Image (cartoon, rainbow, N blue to C red):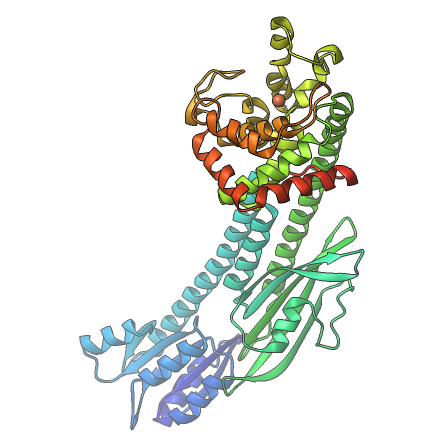
Length: 495
Ligand SMILES: [Fe+2]
């Protein structure tokens, strides 16, 4: 049913139009000879089409047009005038009017213009639905491309705000162990504390039961900006394989309408996408974790065999972390650094014990075998796509700044920063650690070695950074942390 308003201060014109439109069963037509009453009606009711006279005593049809479009953005407004000018026509169309009719007009022209206007409105509304589908498709494509879980949820939240349009929306993750929700993303414009509570999952609205697995939807009247308004709150559970993963919350304020079935359908589709993104993320996380546990076990096996590396990788990480923080690396990169440090000597798994733990210097043949460990390590981890960021640590930590290192003889900045950084901290720890055949040297001695070989073995900028960190007391603190980690024997690997 289309809600149509006819506004004309000449009552007989209203009556004629009403009579002409009376044949259309799907038209609900209201007439107004008082423009003030018409403006009031526009504030309180849903309207699809307005037919208004242009000049009505002290009032203008332009006032009606502006109010209609302010309250009902997709409303069709047709103006009627007995004094047409090009200027008037342009002004009406510029303000968003759909068309205008010149009085006196034939009733066939009137009904044809109204029908054309309503058809145009339908097309516009279908375009909105298509835009929603386009947004859904964008999200699906992003998921297929493997973009991060957080990005997908942000896209879903943004789509809710754009397409409904919702006053505010949020996505909460459910923590089964804690029986509580954690806010993942939130957006919209609101200054009402009760909305914030609802979006954050802190339930103040009595009927909302967060553990429920069915959609919660409630509407109630509020006053917003001094205008009576209908607020709808929706909490849509995110469920995958019968497991509750979280909730998608929407607050929708509209002066006239409750949320439509089409909009509820869109919410439900977006909730399915969010649940599916969460499930994929959980599976990938579990897969990575089990893979890293396996590799971590391998790294432990090397540490158990190699007298030298016992505890070495933990200390190396805490030292490297200091430099990484000074370089401004983000959390994700520091996580990769942790795994890189933990696994950097994993290629030693293929080195015989006699060479690995030989007291004293290695002969030439033994050195050749020992120097294969970066390539062996890279080969072990290189088949796993998500470990690719780790490879530079494994492959390049024995490269030298002057190009005389191994395995590839890279020079200067050709050596990835991961390799240059690890070379500095790996050497510092090697000099200061106890070996089966000698006591570790002092920190000052190791620093002097780093300085003397800056520009030949090491990146001079990183050596300076390391020296500065030492003077700030950060290196001693990192060594203590590393030693404590060794005692507690905990060093999970993460990417
Ligand atoms: Fe190494």
